[in-house]
Image (cartoon, rainbow, N blue to C red; front, side, top):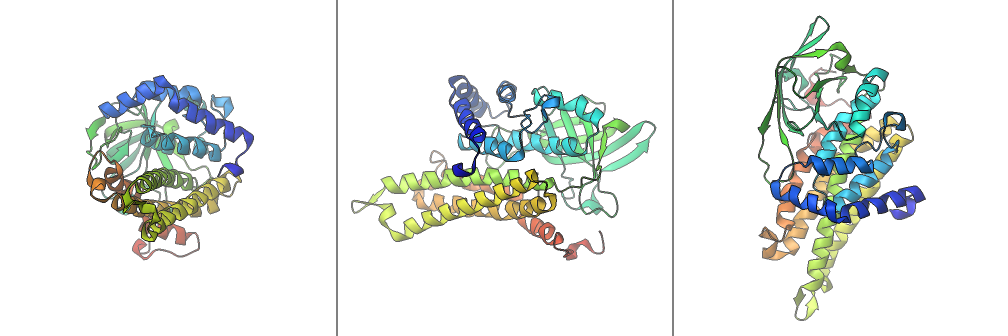
Length: 385
């Protein structure tokens, strides 16, 4: 991958690695893992490096990087086992509609505070009826004088409680197949209830729970509608989840290769067995394919090719996360019985890979979305747009 990077990008990758190896950052990261909670001090340290506002334009206090550079930052944070990767992914989902749909006034109001690390975001999409089951969503959006009144619940939201700004995805208008507006709700707003946490199968440093709205008033200026850009930027969000899968897969390969190189049978390393080396080879092949798919997707966005980015984003979300599960499974099996123990880490990683498949909808729906870009309408829509 390194031979595709510009000199500036190589320096940024190097700075990310140096940041993660800093003794103070490692101390904060260890404390974050021990408590299992999001560390605002660690988040502020990320913001000081420009990682939180990487793609926010310089005029709003951000770094003005393209999305390829953001992905390089995120990948290398993940490869260093940085504990706030889930927090960053949820935060970035909240930024995207502001960045691409927001008015100049909304951008001026929020982007500088986001870039500085003052505001941490969540992108809340999933309704209890299902993320993509728009016709059965329970969210009620009532137009009132000066704004909107919201009633309903969003579930399984990353950063649900800690987020200073909740970016609530509204029910798509009739005739729209994906999202076309969001509401920006500041923490502490009257009628807004958070704090209900879900327990993950494999605990991590995350805030994952519900956002409940009881007659929450949102002023007109804090409803952000599609300005004609469309929803193709969702390809970036899908690919960022795939990127988390790639980082996990690379870690699984490294652990499996290290273990089988050291473990012997009749005095020879397990890697001398063709069945073992071929499993490792398949992991390496998947990792290279996955990296190419993800970075091709984000480069298409940077080149202004939104539809193609969205198409590959859907492909990446399905293919990479499913491949991650396979790689983690094989890596755990190569560890033998040790792979089923907590200290070995590889077993919990295998279990954790499932969340990447499920987040922002499983692969079957992404295959439907992908085929829609070719003009094939999914049968489950039953006449809906």
